[in-house]
Amino acid sequence: MTCIHSTAIIDPKANLAEDVEVGPYSVIGPEVNVDQGTVIGPHVVLKGPLTLGKQNKIYQFASVGEACQDKKYKGEPTGLEIGDHNVIRESVTLQRGTVQDRGMTTIGSHNLFMAYSHVGHDCVVGDHVVFANSATLAGHVSVGDGAILGGFTGVHQFSQVGAYAMTAMFSAVNKDVPAYLMVQGNMAKASGLNIEGMKRRQMDKSVIKLLQHAYRVLYRQGLIIKNALAVLDELYEENPRQELKLFIDSVRASKRGIIR
Image (tube, rainbow, N blue to C red; front, side, top):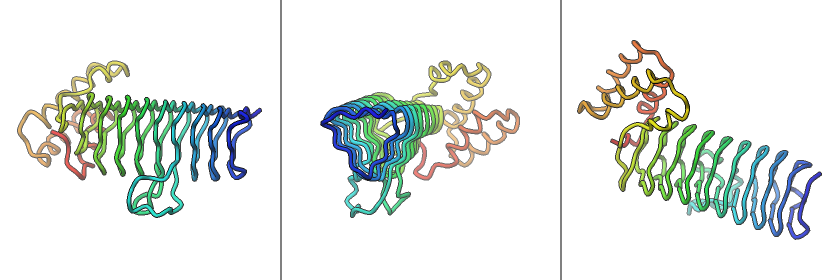
């Protein structure tokens, strides 16, 4: 049975699964769809078009699905899609897309958004991502699976943060971060691979060693990107591991240039 506090305001055009919980003074607007097992705390605002999956937990004062802060936005019907098993902590802001781009902000599953973190319009966030307190994505940013954004990280528009990458606290990211990389500073610079993250995922030591070799090719041999990619492609032919391919593909896909 749906458990809705008497002080919550639910628009008749919202669609909530039977076992959704809604806390005191929360406001849920039209075109909001909330799936099974999701718990919405007190003083939360949900605005549509918004699709919120199963077993999500939203804490007080979060704003999910609000219109974006892009000055070009003129009220067009854009959306936000969120998967399952996400934890959205206090005062997090997750905003809808714009018609100038995808028209949709997309967030996967099993993510942790710590207090005051922000996802701007048209962003794509994968699965098992951690946003530490006040980590912020500008518009049009993509973040790969398993990435960790340190506290107060700021990511510039149109940048990409690769899968399993990690940013240190107060990192200012204005270019693309390849998969598995660690970056830090303002402006952010490469500081090695996310070795601890690899170990936590029980990555084989031989794969870690292979990625360390790939890192040295890209960052320690003084090669331009084109030539480094040629060497890395040869390395992949000799060692066809999916982890190495992910690293190479994240470099090749860069449009802004990678952090070096």
